[in-house]
Length: 236
Image 1: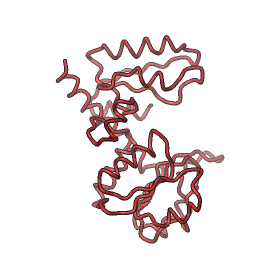
Image 2: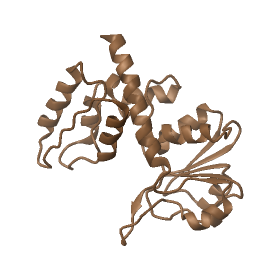
Image 3: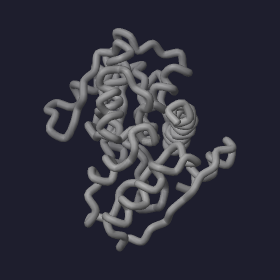
């Protein structure tokens, strides 16, 4: 959240932060969201996840007005991503696509493998790669012969949430490897879902952790917020 606040300041975007107690009730949180939904000076709303277990996450996400949902988690925005006619894209998958684009990598016809099927990263990432004519495989905890699948990838996106899970021997020579994971080790250091030292030897291009996808995620949040401001102004 500190990084998001700092990014807003750097971009000249006005922001408000509400730090609520872990004991906050569902009704109180819903009331705050409704107030922000109606507030013309606010273009984008995000609820930092995870939230306390006594509050249903889906109910909270669904309460955010779709046109202010800069995280793109609302079912309306998820559905738009599915059909390819979207206003907002979840920030991390959007950041991955921007990295691919800026690196001059053509997705069309490539074998794209995603390890992870979360609603926040894995599923929307698959749709975005598919919209760019990639041939997409989603792998998860029940996937058999995972290494066989990952070694077929021209573009491999690791979003499984397990430190150093993807090893160098699981990567096709010259593949593009994008590490979405961010995990804190016992020694306090951060690492990704990819074992960088071994993966780097096989990969043609690879993102580091930290400093790879993370900054792109925040940049895409700023982009979504600007777009939301334009959309909301048009609809007022």
